[in-house]
Length: 454
Image (cartoon, rainbow, N blue to C red; front, side, top):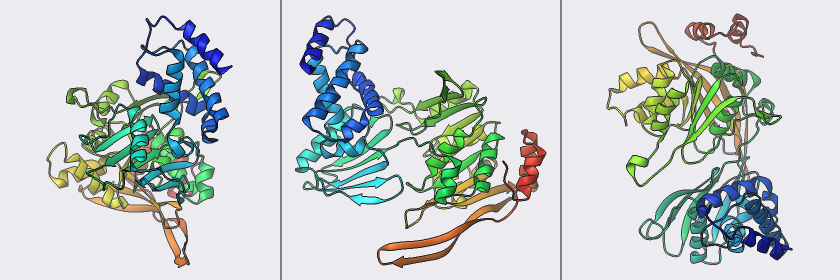
């Protein structure tokens, strides 16, 4: 049956006037198969499963009248399957669910991190250093990146939600083969109840942040890698009313998925954008460039996936000129976040630190600090407001805080207990901004009393 389908396809596509580029076809098919039939790939590499996946690929190619110059239909299907699915034992983890990261420390030392924070070393490994390098090279090929002696450190992607960082000799020892980090971003439909149930935050904290973004107060979510800051930011964007226009900017791969459909019609107003790296500097599109473009699309909420460099200056400029900006940043506390912002802004303009601190504290009155504790639980450790006083000085108020009441080691297990509590009220100046931006007085009064907004 499979052979017949492929032969029919060959006859149907013998003229190749509309032939496409193989890499673009690979991206199309990869997204389709991983979205529709990833469970088949996860089940393993048996002959029956392989044949079934190939049939789905062949059907997609035929239905969409896809051809690649110089390839028969059978060759195209074989090549697509090889590049997409045959990543050795890693295939079932890459296309699985609930996994955030695969870390290749060497050809025989691989570990995975689950979305709940749990780490696990795999008993499986590659056959040799060369085998590890070849598999990683196949992954990188999708994004056109080559891992070789001339380029021993490479950043690439396998699909729009799978990022790859890889290194080979001479950057790592020859007997290691390759070291790689494969970051898998599976957009999660997190709900307010999920955060509360997991103890990440309280209803009061989540309501407050929701209303900040809803009524024009820019927010920065800070934390280390794996702390859950992107998950928090992504959920906040899902609470934005459908009538408000959202413009997202992400670096390299897309972690956010905000478009909502009902009965085949898009309900909200979202533009997702991704940076593009290029060896030709003129063709390079970074977050700074996309921020400049965003301002021409009449956005009401701008999300900068992560502030990493000089785009921090453009982000604070946007936040100080009437746009609501939601962003994330690597930092180790709320107060340190402002210093980190100022440092990044300085990469664009060498201004005095005091001036930059004035700008970033005005731009982002609210900072959220998230952390993954030693027991792998993710907590919203603090929500802080920075108030600009009439004399120009700054006053930092902790609005909510996570108190740790127990922190001990029981064998190999970390026992950590604590609770969230409100600490201080929002400032009068923030209340005025809420009122000016349309927040009902009743809601403001509830916040002043420490109550729930909804």
